[in-house]
Image (cartoon, rainbow, N blue to C red; front, side):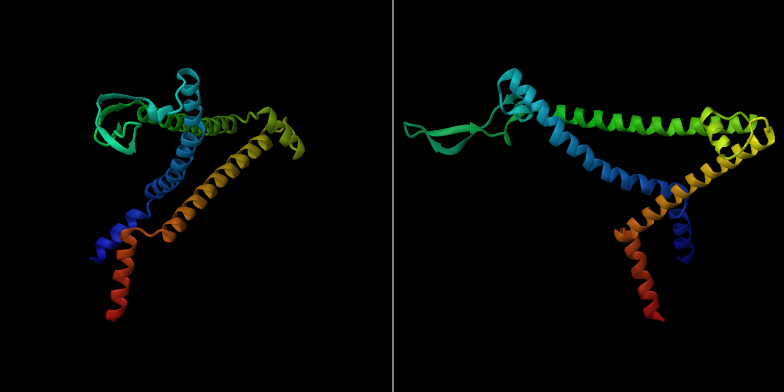
Length: 213
């Protein structure tokens, strides 16, 4: 059993699992943003357009195609005393176009944001690759030349230029590693604040073990 929990601990502390936990936490927060953008900004605009074009104030909720309509009493009566019947959506069969459109809106938002994230990551990786190539060849960019000038490095001194570029690459790598470590620490803190079932079982096991001693 001790070996099993040791292997489990080794598994959950691996980098990929920690990266995944960070992704899950960010994804959970991102879901709220998507729902807020969809429900409180985009859907009202769509409802306004529907009302403008069709003259209906029901918006997406009224965008349905009834296949089999069921009726129920509304609890009110007309002038002749007959009960007023209304559509019972719970027992009717219909196509909910509004829900379908809402799902499409959410999908487009998520896909667009993911596209921006992937594009940003790829741009960063391309920048790192180009930086490595420049370091290897000792060729600085225009901005780097300005920074070198401020640091008192002459561009004619190839050795100094290459050393400066190597140091910059090292500093950026350290900054990236630090940011990743901070994200992992945040994930650990969030996990401690919101323990999983496995964490609770582990705590119970430790408590029973201490009591047995």
